[in-house]
Length: 288
Image (cartoon, rainbow, N blue to C red; front, side, top):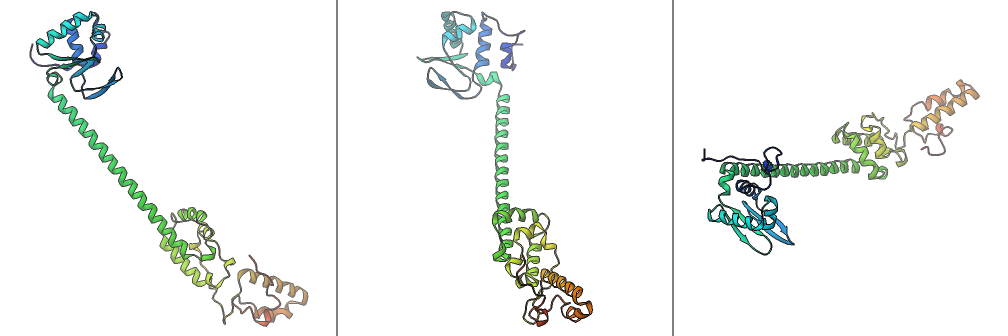
């Protein structure tokens, strides 16, 4: 029964049923020393001085040990000397503290336990490094994604009419919402087509801002061909509405038969606005 080792938790010293009671016996004092020895190297500040404590060591004063064990200082010193003669511990006295080293500490703690602890520590360190690596990768991917987004936004931004781009501050959020509904390529294709059919033939005031176009899902709109006829600008929608209203008023005043010829000449929205027959109905101001 005297061979082998058992591993005890340090909390056994404070257990209400099996904990140690003062004054300690010699066995109690020895158990306290083993349980309170450092299980890993660390630094403690004692009396304003930093003391490096290695695995299996304690740093305390004789008076402190005597108080905990319920012994006198001389009895405590005598017991430590007995343990030193038995090669159970080593002591070094100085002006700051008494350094006590438990001999064969690794045997008491068990090599397997120490190895398992080291392995667990290594595994935790490895996992931390892996998590850090994954976080770095995620950060890099987010940076690339943001860069790509900025590049795509610039493609749409510069494809739009230079005088109707508005501000980047308003256009960018609209672009981020729009790209969830359509690809950048679809937007660019729609801009190119609508510019060819309509925007390039309009005054800038009749071209929507980029933000307005994105919010209205302008890439889905089928744009009518507004190519000028005979070198002149075709009637716009609002101009056509004014024309129709004025022709209706003329018909009410002079009779429909008297304006039928004028109506037939101006019936095509693509009619030349500089035609003499349109002088009566062409608006005199620009409509926004």
